[in-house]
Length: 172
Figure 1 (cartoon, rainbow, N blue to C red):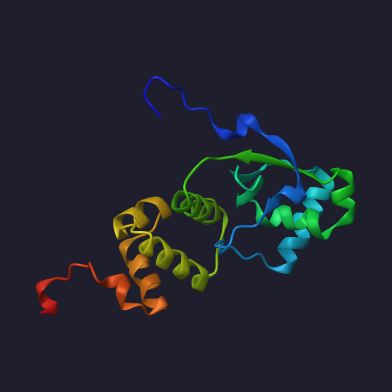
Figure 2 (cartoon, rainbow, N blue to C red):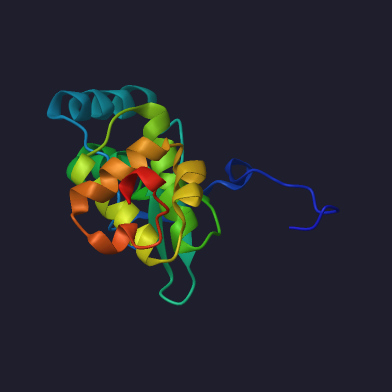
């Protein structure tokens, strides 16, 4: 975006989208325990959808892929009363970012709220490295320390993730 364009947050353009045109992403490491899912259902039942889900619109497939809001989406799929009350429509806020930026956005949303699965996080780090993202990029965009990035890379057990890593002379 050039400096003359004013940034407008996506939340100012929330749109109702049929749930059939929405799909989960394949990389979300966030897990919610059953009691919290029940609480989310109760919250949506009592208060309605108070926040839109965040999606990327894939124009080619005419589908919305979830960046944040998978569990709110799941509630509508699982509970007929919510689906009927909302006429099968979910409030969606759209962001237009490439896949690595969407992955980073998902992690930022999750980390700001709670915990996520370590194995899935390590897979995301692996995928971002395979996309050519540096440790510094991952640290900046996922809000991690270098130690966290290294630990997550170690979990995958892939030496290729360390191939361009500079080590101190103590390793020689």
